[in-house]
Image (tube, rainbow, N blue to C red):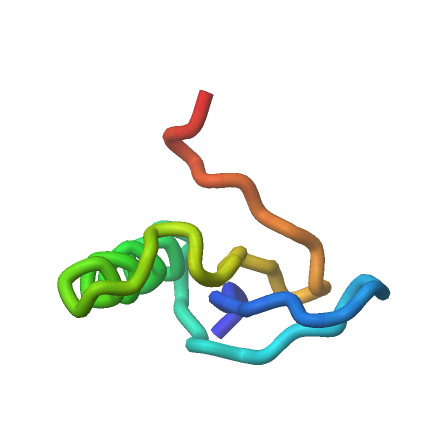
Length: 67
């Protein structure tokens, strides 16, 4: 698994909590979307936490369909 959905928590690069691991970038962003949908349904604000996708080297990955 080379793509991870993570929650950053620190000041330095690489300080994050692993949420899930996925084979593709698309699967990692789908996992973030599912979690976000569930949070909104249960009353959490849409910006309650920050979630990002990182690759196998820990570099941030942009959403493929983002402009």
